[in-house]
Length: 197
Image (cartoon, rainbow, N blue to C red):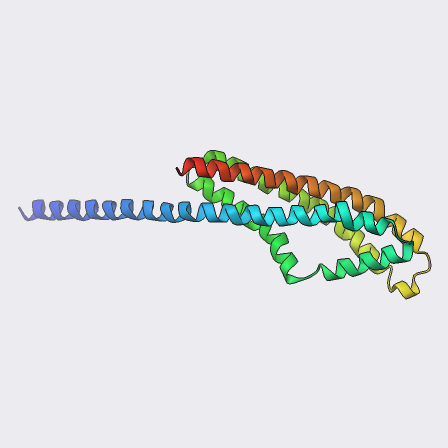
């Protein structure tokens, strides 16, 4: 009799524990699910800011500088490259990757496969833009900085020639990649909205 009571008590305890775990699991999943939408929106804004930054260089900054003389071009680009190294830029530059990746992960965990697919695609597109930046644009920026103080540069035309055409072409590629990433995130937002109706 005592054995039967012990067995019954153990079974009841096990059932209670299982019930508690089952209740906790959806709560945790629900927390991830609730965060997925806002993170996707933040990712879309960050990707849009990066696409807009690169686009602004394509359509205004670089064409405007192209009309100037070599000294003005080199000096202006050195100053731009220094000015852009600030906390706000780095927050958006790194945040666009981190938040998009996390948003894709949370969408997948929440079972929204379509939203996860498009957010994952956006992450890969942004990674491609980062690779272009690290492999081409940053080395070119560093080479331009190593040319030194404009007051002591002897051949501005040579410094500009080594920089301009390649930097402009790869910046256009970054614009295209980030714009495609932005479009993918818009698709992810639409898929998220449909899945949560």
